[in-house]
Length: 143
Picture 1 (cartoon, rainbow, N blue to C red):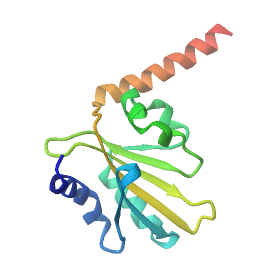
Picture 2: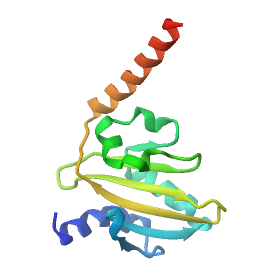
Picture 3: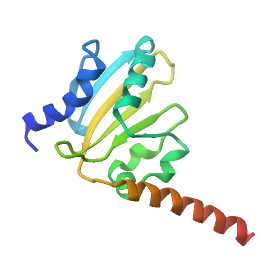
């Protein structure tokens, strides 16, 4: 994917978030990064929830499709307040993930937008959730 194509994809997220955020490229994560103060949190979260079809937290990330967890790797080890927003590839855009990271003191947040090589379907989302429920039922009935 060319630099221009990536910018176009990133713009599908950065433009709706407004021009109050300053973005920079983070080479080691291959992601677009911004840091902001807690006052912007509510607006940004509302916008992300409108833009992304999936929101993962510490508990729900276990239900994510395996391909998504594999590509995100260590990032899926979420703490209590951390979130990952994803949306699967569409006609013109690849799969995207936004990693939402509150800092320990609660006054600052960082957010990364990452283009993923994996893709997943609604069926895979459903299958991952059904698989987890089946595993839980097996454990319950085994005891």
